[in-house]
Length: 508
Image 1 (spheres, rainbow, N blue to C red):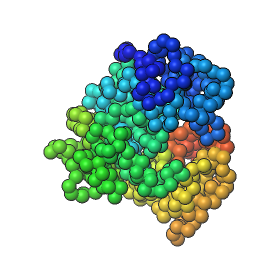
Image 2 (image 1 turned 90 degrees about the vertical axis):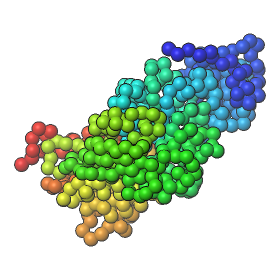
Image 3 (image 1 turned 45 degrees about the vertical axis):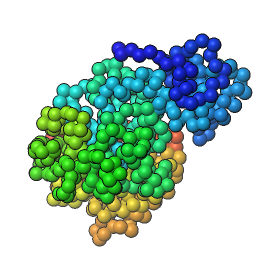
Image 4 (image 1 turned 30 degrees about the vertical axis):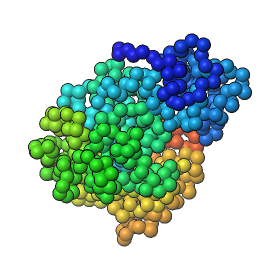
């Protein structure tokens, strides 16, 4: 294990610019930090944040922490209980939490090559491509993202796309201690705005694209862009040292202009890019042969993932690898074995039509998935689509519209309704679909997601393509505040089996 000298409480107070209440009588080394009062190891530092319902300081009494880090409101709560442990008081805990957490764990990100990927769509796929390619090039890789965390190919439990700052720095320390050389991670706009990646030393940042999403968190698309820009603007304390930016959309062009010295990726035949990629051919399975021009060299490789958007994801991944000095030929060779759970994941039970599950849960992603399927089959295209509750309501009708514009058969179903009325969410999606539907497009609704998948499979004929979008790799459906086991891939296999298809025999 890599060792470092644990900082003292007073050293952390100085770093945070904190006022110290009840200062320790002797130097007090701090070896851990966390937001969960119950899970924090004895002697750690409890970071008590203000919450939407209750202040974290309300749980300080049950913590075995050596000291607390909080704001003035938190101090009042702690003081009222008669607690006499040291308290570091700052104006905004989140603003300094990343730096403090990094110091506690010995700034682990400095000991590895860190590659961050942000954007609306493609983050997960790009990080998976990076993981596969880097491993093929001889790197020991850590992965952090939507589908979970892995260290050298082994799964590690995690909850958020980008963990909270104390968990993230502890995870970096674990990766460092287990010999990881390169970390690839998704960096969400929430992570950038909420200080989760503060104190993290990124070698390079990648940008995929920008389209409507998270407008429940960001008031406008401009606000959403500015959140992402924190990762690229040289004036931002969160900016990576280097950047690689896909300029296939206007947002990417704008981000590249803001970033200054970035490598630009283009897959639309545009001039002036540093990395150009295009599709040479497509197999019946959707796998494609891609050519890539980078650093004065040309590379040709097979990518098992379908869709033009994955040409861009692969090119961005190769550019990021190149930017940190990885051998590109070895990297792209590794991409031939790439697979991403719940992203254009084919479900094959011997049926004579294409069946796919995909995570697409925003308008542009749904349009891209349906365009890909259209290009793969001569027959019709069908889709199950829904929208999440307690999230951006403005995109629901647009998602329905995108589905109806590009599919012949649309079944509107529940996604994760959470605490909203599922029927109201479905009504919004369906209204958008019905308004946009052309002649001959059939639109149905099913309150049961499993029932909707049954309808989709029963509808499909030889040569068609069907897709269930919205949940992808997820294995739970959130209804109210309860998560019920539900896996679109399992349900698709079940529905196919009930129609008489098996993995080893064709239906007559």
